[in-house]
Amino acid sequence: MPWEKQFDVDETLAKAGQAFWSQGYEATSMSALLAAMGIQKGSFYSTYGSKHEAYLRSLEQYAKTRLDEFEQLARRSGAVDSLRAFFEAIYEDCVSPTGHRGCMIINCALELAHDDPKAQAIVKTAIARNEEVLRRLIQAGQEAGEINRALDASATAKAMMSFVMGMRVYSRSGSDLEAVRILADQAMALIAPT
Amino acid sequence: MPWEKQFDVDETLAKAGQAFWSQGYEATSMSALLAAMGIQKGSFYSTYGSKHEAYLRSLEQYAKTRLDEFEQLARRSGAVDSLRAFFEAIYEDCVSPTGHRGCMIINCALELAHDDPKAQAIVKTAIARNEEVLRRLIQAGQEAGEINRALDASATAKAMMSFVMGMRVYSRSGSDLEAVRILADQAMALIAPT
DNA sequence: CCGAGTCTGTACCAATCGGTCAACACTTTT
DNA sequence: AAAAGTGTTGACCGATTGGTACAGACTCGG
Picture 1: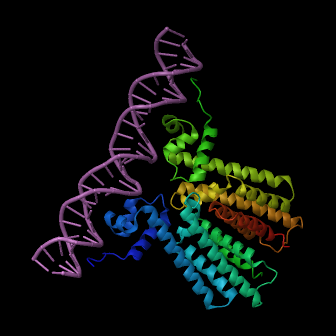
Picture 2: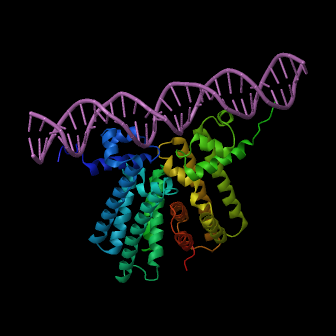
Picture 3: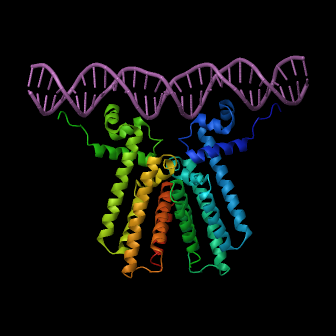
């Protein structure tokens, strides 16, 4: 086997993901992308095929990473605590120096999913899986007596996803971060009314 | 005054808005834009200045139209009824044949507001005003005894905005429309618990 | 130590990008 | 009817777009 690749494929893909994440797909030119990745055109095209393929791949990588993190977090403590930790994590992400980037999945939902079936498929499964983890947590909380059993777990999970989207939209549009704080609290208020 | 313009400036701007709305700013090329508007390059540049200026102007036009509609709706009936009508209108919009376009303001929030101060300003005021109308309705409902006075009107208005964003994201990403229905109901459940 | 095979760098490509400009069409004023 | 002024048109522009081709660099098996 002659001459290994001079760069780590996944690691460099992650750098591409960073660029796409903060600037969007169309607004990221090939030259900007290559600069962010630190490789040359030839290497890029022989490895990832095209800008579009690279984008989808980096989106999948992002979705997988995020979902893994969430599932890991959901295994560490009780249902309500996990949900609180989930919203705190998103809040922290939103107020962090790089937080104005929002969520790559949600950004893609609005920019590409509209008329790109492959992007749409990735976005839909990512949202569905996230929703499902939320639903399981709510259900577990209800069985443990932590959460009101009268709530529709599935609908409440969707409502929570909606709050996540709201937080991401508010923060990416440069809004007052106080709004993001309030939304995180409102999301928790769905299951743990004051 | 010699030779009037051969097209209505606002009307043609609205056509540009339609194109930007469904395809986004970057993905709408000048040729596609001109085709949608039905005018020629020269007329476009002499009237609107640039693609970017035309976009911002069409965005303002969109925001104004939408807000006017909402305020008119809010004047027609009681607070809770107005809120219900608001979410029904958004639901109807989402399930309509052209509904997959989402909301132009929210689309812009994610695509441009991130690093375009002017777009950001338009988006922020549009969201703030919409939020304010919601807040006033909630407050009016509380004073009329229709809505629980223990609710924080401002925070609840933000939560409702969040549901709107959720509905728009779900529908633009081609999701099951049942989810949009559920979100509309969940939003109303904030103030009118079953 | 010499090809075979793989990776990298860059010159190059047609197409398209957003934008300009000058010639021409038209209406009003004088 | 001609001057003045505005509107429209489409050819044209350089720059940049995403993508290709190929020469050269490198590492291996024989």
